[in-house]
Image (cartoon, rainbow, N blue to C red; front, side, top):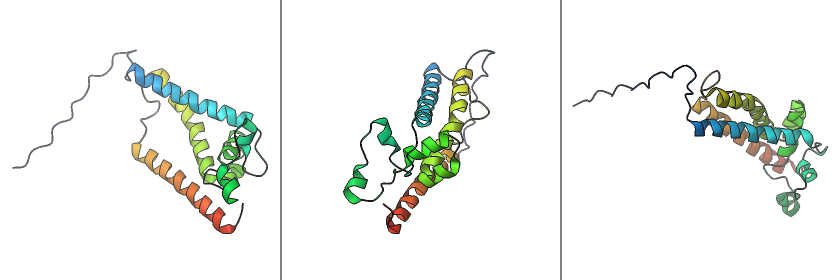
Length: 158
């Protein structure tokens, strides 16, 4: 016997001034926006390395162990440089440093105001995040990072 799908139960509409998101979700959105904004501020603050990698060393971090041991770039080599270039609006140079990192930096630049406004309003600003597009975008960035890394390994750059 076939069963009919249950009807979706609609939540009652929020009263004027009543937030749609619970308080903890609003805090999470706000903290995420703040964390991304701080990452972008740090990227803007640090001077990008002209080599296209190693910018993180200017922030007091250790050199890349993978590069030291294998004399080849790791998948994330150039990512801090890409963020530093993207934070300055130098997208072409950011893409050359680390294309996946550049895509993630642009996504962060777009996400900060959207997340902050959504947290403040208590509902999604403009529209809710389409989950499948987030998954596709994240996968695409990962594929770009790995492809650029593999091309760098095979081309002998390092």
